[in-house]
Length: 318
Image (cartoon, rainbow, N blue to C red; front, top):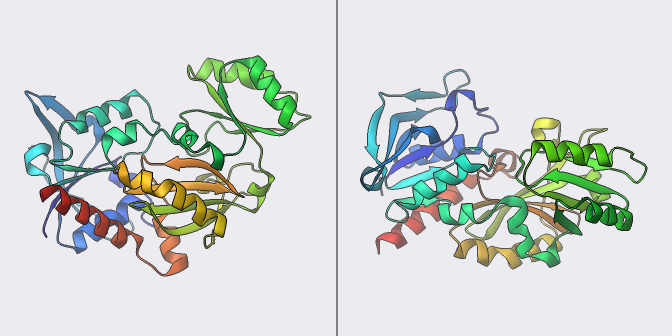
């Protein structure tokens, strides 16, 4: 099977080839003989019933400083010239992101988009998880300050974060003695129009925030991310340390609960975050973690992902 794979992502020149999941997905596609083209979300154009992109042929290699080659740009019809689109640009999950999902809806599934753009739009990380309330820590989503104050009075130690943030940006740990809650709420009100998400602080985070990768609804591997000293966030780009990890019985239970729904929705590549016994996020936009798990476990998760993508592509042709 030789396919044309269009990779919709951020500028490829700026990625870290030792950490970027899109990079190894592109490497694996190339290894399988698929033809790659690259374009940015702003290169999309809908015209007269066609979804086009100004795309460039792409070759990738694991060589720092020269990890890619891009050919001449040309306008391609994604509905007829591409077999698969990998939607891999990073959040924020804003109106530009949502618009891209609407445009890609015009070609999916004739051209297979991974993940399914409708379901990406319907599954913002911190909202989609509310479909599984029994798996979540105590959580409040609101703009009502009195409700936030009441939640804090009940739980004492809390986390505040923007509803559509990413990468740990804007996440605050507010202890029972912290006098900054009102100032933080004022700041959130100035920066965001959306409600705030408030959760009970989970002290288990000091031992790590586990990222689990699911491929077509099945757990494929995990990496534990331990926050740096003096830091409430475990995201690796703010100093979190990756550690080898396996799944606990509780984490297998979480995956068994949510996995069938992910697969049904066409969410082939998903990264979930688990702290202690609780599911905190379901990441479907541009999950990461493949390379860290590969190194710890001696596996090739991008190969598992491409097996799943190719199966779905074959199913759409049947």
